[in-house]
Length: 306
Image 1: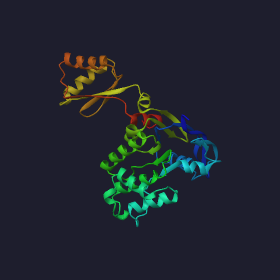
Image 2: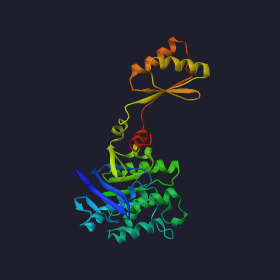
Image 3: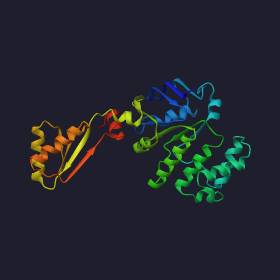
Image 4: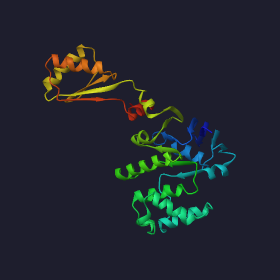
């Protein structure tokens, strides 16, 4: 089965508010799929439907070949969910949390499974401490470790790095990447575009209740065919001369206090032309930067806020 998740025409309303208006996407086995969207776009609602926590108003969805709406027990046995906040018992130790989940899932050798996961997630030294003594990053690692009990084929991570500091966020990214390398399929929702760009094989942007764009990070960046050349000057007089020169050459400029930006098609020829014109006119440039479109640029363009 190439697509382990298939979603078609998914719809959901809350009273008069239509959140999902016909969502379609597929997730390939063993890949990281990122679902992006602004606050309130419906990312969490979509995850809740796929994990059988909320009923849809219409559409179809299958996970591991099981119908999400008609075979919910089979779906739940195939998946795991880590929500926005760590679902750990703070008055139990890390080891006890893992053993409890293993017993509930009827996993044989639950003690051995707990020890292996504690080691995998670098929690062995804290295994027998109460979770209320754990840092935010440790709780998050324990939460994901609990999600792996029973070897689920698909893990849903709903904004897994919310509230983490930069160091713990990077550590979590590496952990998620290693899970995918081991063959686990991951559906990730996030508001951090750099997180999606770092982790995801495929990204879908949810806006106004539908998927408005999808593709790999590189494919989405190509939505914007132009980047920017930024030129900074030490003196206003030099900047004004550069503006007049480049406008006369029909370049499109954005003018700032000490710098100007030029739309760039990404070609070496255009960069060379700009610099050659400035050099020939003896206009010194204090700093030159070439910037290509980012995933953030593409996202803001798709949702109409760029």
